[in-house]
Length: 252
Image 1 (cartoon, rainbow, N blue to C red):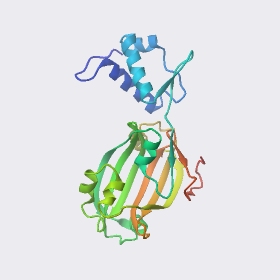
Image 2: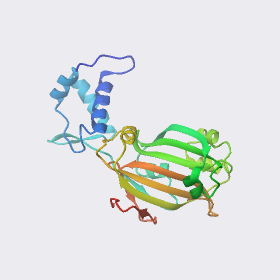
Image 3: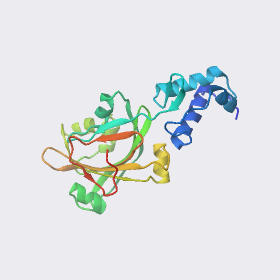
Image 4: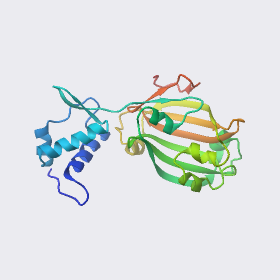
């Protein structure tokens, strides 16, 4: 396989992308030693310098690690994510040196329906904002999240959320300066093909499913969410949180 130069895409970047794809697809599993430089040069038809640039970028991103005298190995950066009364996604990541980010997949106004209505304590016919997105740490997907908020309490939420980088900042525009996690339910299962693809992980690696309810300080539900987390990249710290776990859960 010989790479061709593409406008705006250096050869080393194309090599990096191909190796990244192998890592996220499980072709190069965590702990696996990368092929030698001569092997990668032959595979991609590039120079040693190009291979080293690609591997150096992967190492800076935490996807591989070099071990003196042994070679370079696939490495998954593990995030210890605290589940507490005041869990905040961005703060959790920043405190551990990760750069928080995300991608919005969809955002719609829909009827609550039975489950969401029960969790938000509203009527099934009432409208809610349904937001689906991918949460990232250093541009690596770690969660696929669905969030539901009552529209009558948060009119124009989609527009306001687009203007702020976090849920916390957006909720503050409605006068909610603080809120707490009232419920966290965790369970483990295997991912669907779509979930594995969106999280860029192997379909053979399990995921954590975390269901949450956030309330204001008066106890009124303001957000119901369910997120699929990559178990290869996240360890949950439950020290400060009362968490309900499913029967088939993996303990951490």
